[in-house]
Image: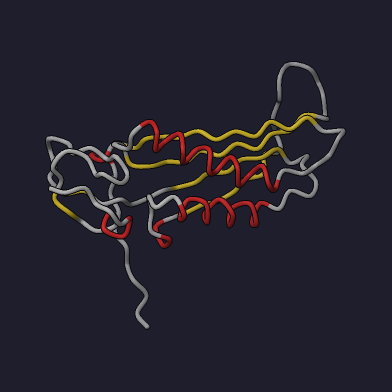
Length: 160
């Protein structure tokens, strides 16, 4: 099978023979069909980040994920949580803060694709990180791979 040239082709169910030439998802022995679905983005941030607009940060992260070509716009789900009970390091320093994203995606993407996705999300978050010279802020993103065998989804389309 020829490699897919257009990311829109990757959004459909298609028979696999090896890996997708665009995104690097590999075939698994138990399935000959694959769909690029997901992801789920979980954003946690310390509540001492005055001026951090979580809703805007989520919107920018979603746009970054969409432009990656790995996901359809409608499949990107994100949410944010302000954390009130946290500790950064061991010192009692109110001037320390964090923003951490966990991107849950279906297993099978290459390390290069995972690294690119993490960097895209990190870059989107850095744009919205408050510029407070009195605050030491750590911003990070991790990729969590979800086993295909343990993931189920049904999408009910709006009637109207």
